[in-house]
Amino acid sequence: MRDDDIPGGKGQGRAGRGTREGDAHRSLYAKPETFDLIRRLAFETNTTAQALYREGLFLMLQKRGHVKGSDPEDI
Image (cartoon, rainbow, N blue to C red; front, side, top):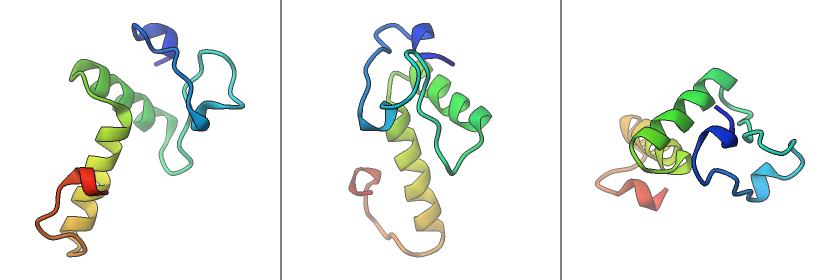
C-alpha cells in the first residue's frame, strides 16, 4: 500500500527519508507483504502502523515473560 492510497498519508518521518516520494518505509525485520498488511490494518482501524508494530512487540515480550502488567505504550 502506497502513501497515495491513504488520505493524508504523505507525512514523512526520519524512517522515510531516502525513499522515493510516496513509497512506504520498509522494515528490515518484516517482509514487504507483512508491512503492507500492518499499514492496511492501521488504516482500517484508524490507528498507526507504529502503534500496531509496538503492540506486536509488546505481545511477543509478554509471551516470553519479559513484560508483565505493562501497557503497549511503554514499549
